[in-house]
Image (cartoon, rainbow, N blue to C red; front, side, top):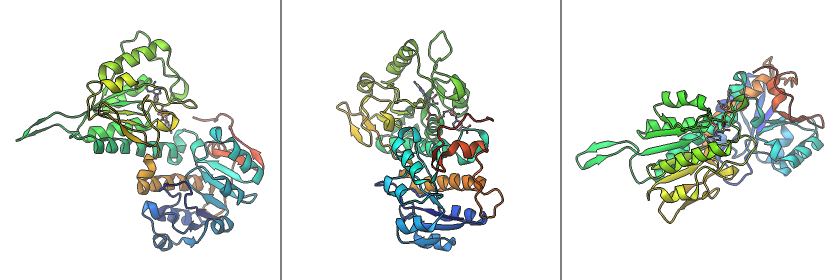
Length: 380
Ligand code: NAD
């Protein structure tokens, strides 16, 4: 089959869905690979680097879409992109069908097969295709780098001839994929790291990474833990305990990284205005939940601002794109693993097996039908 990556149309997006290295793997599966000219430029992959990997570079998006069977991209598709596609063609990208009813209807109308990388089931077998996790990992790492860049002091403690420097104190709220990456990065920079999550099962993981789990004085088990390993909204009593703990910690913390999310909901507000006001001047908050409204009351999505009391609050929503080369490499790998499952005989022929839980789970439209949401997976 012919598979091609579009240049991302979303302003400022640096990622690309196929890299020269992932193109090599796709070729080994028997596919022919194309890219739109300039698609990899912002991630550091020139047209020549693609040509060297055996990829055909075509000048425009329209020509790319006309030339291939499978269109790969990163961001959810724009209306114009779907409209140019023909029945029977496949689109593979982030899609967020729950938030994108119009595009879902359009993809159905166009008769394309749409594969949503954000809908890959989170089961062990599909980890290599789990683009949400690979992007969350990058976001967690980059959040700490961004915080360090905005913090006017060392992260690591030092004893120097000019004086003793204490380590920075970093609190990570939410220890999912992004939070754990943030913990690992902050620990490796020498900070003293504290972390909190409503799921008590992550305490061991947090501690094994060299951070301290913040326990609440609460009679019940931490009740935000719910089915399937995901968090559920906390009870008012639990939330009050949590906020009281954060109020106690706020004046001591130099850096706060918030990553708390509950699937399908707006981000819970956990770092309130009074906590920001209680923080020391020069402290930094990075709110990784900014896109879903933010965990911090004062976050402005997509912006960095400094409060009156001198706290820097960063609400960027494009952390993976800020590491375009790395993010493209990992996303490109996720996509090519998915295509590998779609090409079981490695003969360049796609077998779209709707009996396969992973393929079924990620397919959101097919044959003029909306196939989302999928039935629950048979295996875990
Ligand atoms: P996420 O980005 O959806 O949420 C981030 C974290 O915020 C979660 O750990 C959640 O518990 C926490 N949170 C929610 N409300 C909170 C609150 N009020 N206070 C503090 N923390 C709060 O998480 P994610 O990274 O997508 O991971 C969620 C789950 O999915 C985890 O159990 C993870 O192990 C699992 N997962 C499994 C796989 C796999 O098996 N392939 C892959 C990725 C994630």
